[in-house]
Every structure is written in structure tokens, then in C-alpha cells.
Length: 160
Image 1 (cartoon, one colour):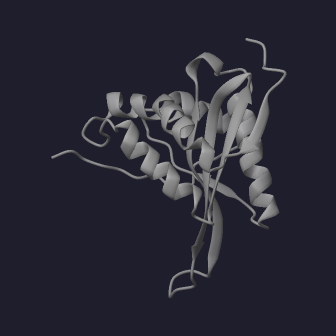
Image 2 (image 1 turned 120 degrees about the horizontal axis):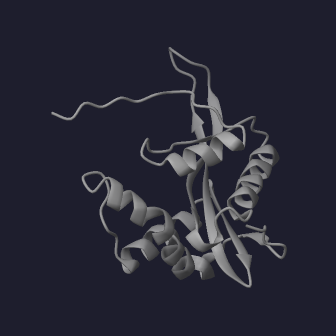
């Protein structure tokens, strides 16, 4: 599939709360379907509250990708951990959420959002971007690996 040539990525603002709540469905619904014991269906009003509060958090930056219409978003969080007995003080940029309309996948939208995320990390003086991905999400895992992301931790679970 051809990439989208008129793709623009911009920072989200308070006027984008409803849009973010709508775009969230592209990432959340597959998680609810795959792991209903971990994720639940959210309603629009609840999601609007979540995104409204995230947009006023100074450590959160959300990028929106559009080409004639909004196609996806990436929510980033500047994380800080103080020095402790086991590790030095650390900072990182967490890619908390990335959502791309399924009709726009494999057309450069996710890659553009990842580039915006990485550029933001560099602007903050950070040396890495971290993210979490659920084991069932093989499409996302392949996407991140194609961009050079490597696993740094494995979490195991045994259902009882």
C-alpha cells in the first residue's frame, strides 16, 4: 500500500479531546477483544475526561497524525525516577499509547507518529523511548522491531 503523502503530525490541544476519545477505539477495542479480563469497554464521556486531564499534564505530549482527516495519535509521557539504593536517577520518554486507524495502517502513519515521539525525546535531552506491548499484539511487535526497538524485559504470568 502506498504511503500517505500529505500526512501532517501536530501536537494535540484541548480542542482535540473528543477526537482522541474517538481515535482511542482503534487501539483499545482489539485489547478488549483479546484480553477482556484485563481491559474493559470505555464510554466516550469517560475517555473525554481521561484525555482532558492528560492534555493539561505538563509531562504529557500527544501527537495527532492527519491527512484530510485524523488518522491516529501517539501519547507520550516524560517519566522520571529518582536515584535509589538499586539504580541511579533515570529519565525516559514513555510511549503510553499509539493508535492508527486500521484503514491507514502500513501507509506511514505509525512511522510518522514514532518519528515525532523520538524527536520529542531528543528535544527533552533523553536517550531512549520506551513502550510496552501486550504479547498477543504481534502486529505491533513486528512494527516496533522494524523500527529498531528491542525487548528489554519479559513479564510472565500463570493463570490459576
